[in-house]
Length: 371
Image (cartoon, rainbow, N blue to C red; front, side, top):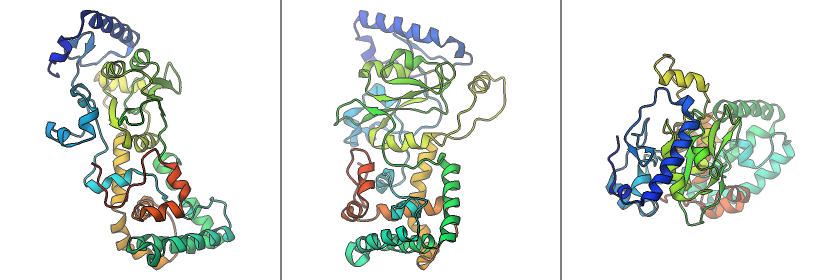
């Protein structure tokens, strides 16, 4: 269990008593899900529990050296912080929205005709030509030529559209990552902390919803659904922190606001298991393995595919701008990586809608680190 903290011992008795009463009420409402819980030491009515499941370890020194996190994360909140694992400092730019297939790259709809394709290609070609945008635009210029060759022909465009739709459904249910968070933002613009619920691990106990109803809601169905953070900073910091600690399966996290849109997008591709099966597994009464999907793994997969995009371009050589027979995750990551490598000015000029689609963060310059 986590060690008792001196800060808790200094709280006024009235606050501790109030917290105990509210915490007990929230736990009583979710008592039907309590079987198999591993309870830790009680702190003012809130169960202190060790975090379960994989998470990214961060030393005290890393927090002190992180100018952003050091300012926004208290010692209490650090235990509940999790981030999308990145291998390189340059990976921060891969968290942004970007075109991921030839239709998105040319900015045309899936039902566009040859004339639409030709018009879009000519407009973008002037923006990304290496003589204009520089050497960093070469990979995207190759993909732009490939997109034109693939989508100009009616039969080839129809075949490619089928593989794009299948690829979207297979990974994230057909949803496009537009860089926008799903939850509403009610905090200060300078605030970098955000709350995220791993709905694939949520058992629908309602503890967080009952304790912090302005932040969390039950989705799908109140009696058999999952909790979701629908409003960031709908409740004050203390209320939100207690609600996070009340979770019996540790599926609520503090995350960096910059990673929130990607995590909420990745959550859409995660399987929701039957809550009864999850409860039986925790009690040791059923040996079926968990689904194996979670939003952090999905988000890290997206980042990895984009990071490996340049290697993929080098491997296939862009097919010399020749048409592609189909679409897959590797090609998706390569297109996004090539687009994100463009100079900021080129992205804003050629794809203003993608710049507006993102959150409040400005477009990252290639080579810009995450800290």
